[in-house]
Amino acid sequence: MADHDRLRVMLELEVGSDPIVGSLQAHGRCFDFSGWVGLATALEQAISSVGDGRPIASARAEAYSDGLRRLP
Image 1 (spheres, rainbow, N blue to C red):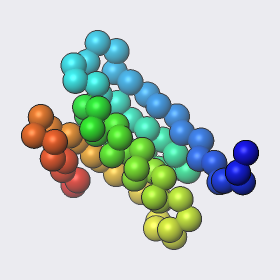
Image 2: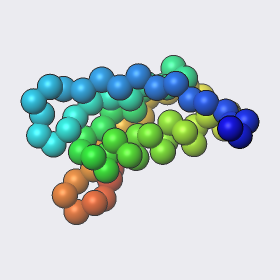
Image 3: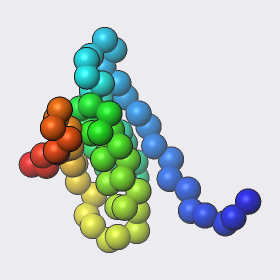
Image 4: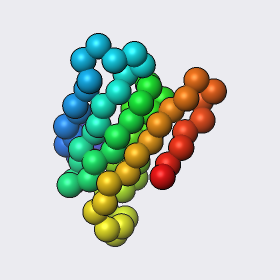
């Protein structure tokens, strides 16, 4: 197995929501999401934020049926 950094995330989901809605927490940051693309976007943001020196803050990613996302 290659020597890679690991990122531990905690996933919180709203039961019964359609589309999927929840938040992902990693390294003290919270990434709210809506939809499967939003979840993938939140994962990408969490992974890319590791070690980039950005201050710890909350981020929000929402995916819409057209595949686009909005960040505040």
